Every structure is written in structure tokens, then in C-alpha cells.
Image (cartoon, rainbow over all chains, first blue to last red; front, side):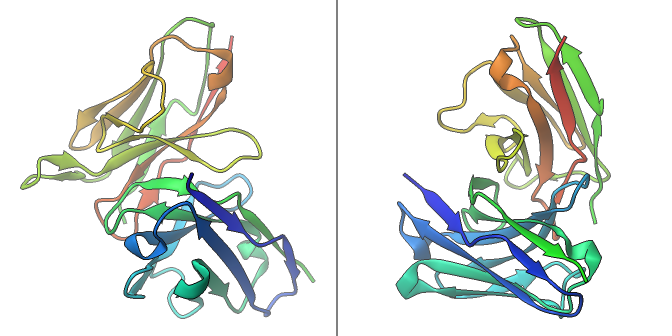
Length: 119
Length: 113
């Protein structure tokens, strides 16, 4: 079955960067896209960007442009999301989710990674 | 950005009764040439990631019970649970993937009365 397993919780100081991984299994990694969505406490889900796991093309939300980098390692069937210049407002649960190309519904989700930004 | 607005924010329904959640988009999410509404619904239980229930506004994801149904077109959509079960207690989100960035509703919390 399709599984997306994310890396563990992180605590970072303001101004630092965080890199979250998402390891896929149960399907052909390069046939799908991976999206990153975050959920801050009490807030709605917020889309950050996506990567076509096949060709590596990416698209980012304007809100995060310049601060977020999504990449993938096809040999490891793993996608990564790196967010820089962290501020307290970036405290959230970060999810990876599988998409069938672009545009797409998100049919499988990782378990989430809590990133806490605190001095 | 397309703004997704759900109503109500929360509702309490008796077991076995019908629950309906509305979602309104600030602009149409109907791709006319394909006759598809780029609208999905998700269920999220506490401490869990969202789970896809419905896509293309009315297509049920594999394995989702048939008591869940989606309807609507253009800017107005509804998720209906025909007979609420205890395991349906959750927060439900609509999601438009018509334009970048994809956006989500604020969520509707469904509880048992």
C-alpha cells in the first residue's frame, strides 16, 4: 500500500532553516508528484509547493517563494522540503502528500512533522 | 488566490442522521472544456493527517463508504454524510486545485449530538 513516512519533529531558532524528508513506498515514485502542505495551530491547511518526482520540476506558492526549496532523490524515493529564515509563525505541522500530476487532489498523506520555531 | 469558505464552522448531528457541509469558492473551479470541477473533500481526525474522501467534486475515493457524497458545480459545493456514524466525528475540509496556489476551506467540525 502507498506509504509516505516523514522525518521526526524539529525545534529551531528564529532565522534557522529546517529540512523535512518524506520517504515514499508502495508505488512507482517517479510517476507521481509530491506536494507540501502545512497546518499552523488553529489555522487552515496551507499549500507550499510541489515537485514532479519524475522530472524534478517544482512550483512554489508565492507566499514562500525564496524561502522554500523542494527537492527529491529518486534513488531513495524521498522528497525533501527545506524552509529557511524561520520565524515563529512557521511553527506548524508540515505534511507531504501525493498528487497525480498537476493539478491534482492529494490522495495519500504523510503522518506530518511538527516544526517548532522558538528562541 | 481563490478563497474557500465553508459553512457552518461546526455542526452537531445525531447518530444516523444526515450532515451537510457547504463550501463556496470566490471564483469558479469548473474547467469548462473538461467539464470537471477541481474540488476535493478531506476528513481529518485528531492527530491524523487529512484523508481524501471526494475529488472532482463528486467522485468518491476508493474505500470511502458510500454514505459520503459530494455535489455542486462552479462555486457552490456540498459534502453530505447520509447517516452519521460515530467514526465520522472529524474536521472536514474542501480544497480547490483549479488554480495556483491550491487553497483549502477553514474546516467544519462535525460532532455527535
